[in-house]
Length: 350
Length: 111
Image 1 (cartoon, rainbow over the protein chains, first blue to last red):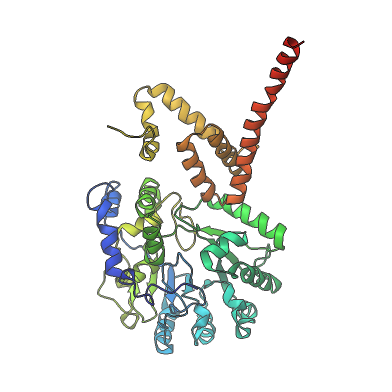
Image 2: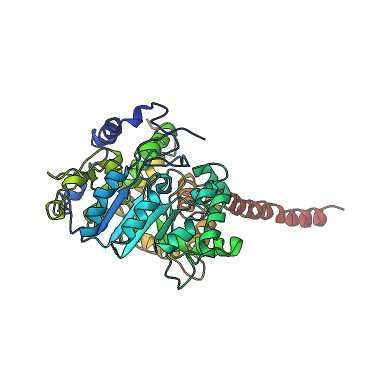
């Protein structure tokens, strides 16, 4: 298993170093336009937050997997975990928010020792769509997690899980040996309690990230291929597939540089820039809360340590009205969300 | 002086061919775009055909483009290689089938 950039004490564990790379070179010498200038071409700079719809809470960077493309740089060696105290502060916000979606992410959120308590409490708030982003293998990682499908069902949680491909080779290459077999078993476990079955209210969606330095294909076509293959090969069902572009930060940036794909990848993102995707990028209707309670425009900005541009910086001083209309903090990684059909935690945006 | 005939950066400039003949260039790109749309054959199947033909035509631009296109569509390397063998088999077959002409000629001329 590879180690996180933090554990390796890599240069790129420092978010400032990542931002430096993203602002220098081809973006400094004028070969490629900066994101700010690109969106200004269509009068979309500065990018402003709209009414909050999605509250995304990152309950910790600890994970049982160490995926090569991970933008969180998550792994078993990451110890940043949300405390129950911060969760209580989040619950106050959840009870009063106007957002229709609550989205728990990590790391593997299930590894937070207070995860079940938090889900139990948060589900009482009656938010319309309560998402947990589960990496699947966690369900099969240890006996104590085997009942997660049943737990999710009891709390009517919407499960969104990563699945890079319907073949073992491509999946294991991106996520580590054995991930494919465990993921298939976990999907069967979720199907067994009713998740992902056509017409079932227990939502099971999959997330596809390309396993390399290329952009995702058409989301609808990919969904068709995934559904056909998983049904034929394993009798597995799921509802929707979200095709998500890998953003050039953290471990994916490390991979791009090490494989000498960084410049070509940035060219691909800029070439695929779609001005129509800008108005729906997720940072305009999402707020990302970190394990220690700080507020960000999105999970990617959280990892780059780019806080919200507002007087309200922490969950303890939360004020939705003050956060609405804030200017979104951007850099060149944002091209990842505006390429092609656009990309967000809920897949394409156009 | 340019030291190679092919430059990967030229692929990005393909669209510029319309600059010297807008009417025909535009017609070509419209046609090209239409061909690769979903039809009786899926866009995925068309991508694999294009990849195989790219190799038989030995066009480095097309090989780059349709390898990338295949990856984006989730096509596996095994599927790509299988498609290439179809192209290679047709090339080999097209060479060998001319052997009949050679045999006919030999049979005609030899006593």
